[in-house]
Length: 224
Image (tube, rainbow, N blue to C red):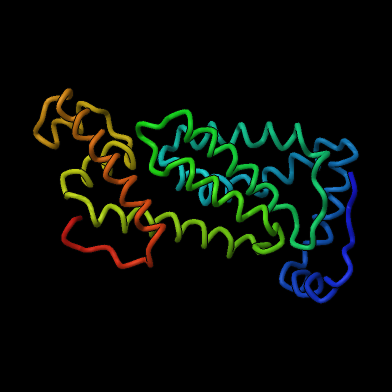
């Protein structure tokens, strides 16, 4: 594994280091991890795992249980592929974030029926993240952006749905309530609810796709 020093980024490294005084310690920790120090690697994962879970995986997968599985898979893939990591001026988090996004993409492809985002949408996000891994090095800002973007997209899309569809998605997908409980709340049978949810998810995906292709607008309060 190589830790690269690119010409022309001295000012950028200095700025990032000033914002993150722990960056040099992280670089040394990554070097130890690359040499086989599992303790160092475990410390890195524990440091960034919560951010990956709450800002990358959970908003995109919409399920705590599935997001937890995705985080465990992210850890396994990082351990397997850490030899491929090359140190950047922004630290390790952007690289970890791309891996977590890829795991989320795999999960979305495996559970098409109740997924909030289309795999193609997440693939475009991964492509953009890989274009410049140094673009979003500040972890706190990156986390806030991820959370805000995901929530805004979903809320905007839900605000443009039939209120019944929006309620079905909120209860079943976002809050993960049992099917029979949600069906009872909507006043329908479980079989009817399955049809409603399928139509709601289809409508949501269309709304998300439309929102990605057009300027963002504020959600309408009437469809809550």
